[in-house]
Amino acid sequence: MAFPGTYNFNYYKGDTNQFVIRPKNSDGSAFALTGYSADYTIATARGSTSVTQFEAQAVVNATSNIVTCTILPGVGSTLTAGSYVYDVQIDSGASLVYTLLTGTITVTDHITGAV
Image (cartoon, rainbow, N blue to C red; front, side):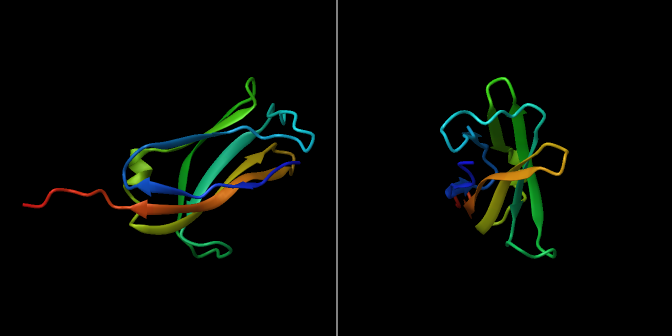
């Protein structure tokens, strides 16, 4: 398979951030997402069970073979300025879990006018 990929991005706290993943097989054809669900998890660190995790939204469209990933303002407002890691995974429910995308998110506080 042609994944996982890496995508690092900046995010303004409390905004909506959305991107689409189009998974491909190693031959470049679309990876069929029929029967898969997706998880988009943001965490303070990798590899530890004691990290703080946040669940963002991941929606599978099996007709178009895409996964739409969204950080909604409710989740985004709970993030503090700094660096986070994330994974987007798909799961078939039959012990098949694939990581489609991984990377870092740099969160910046909004600039507000102080008087």
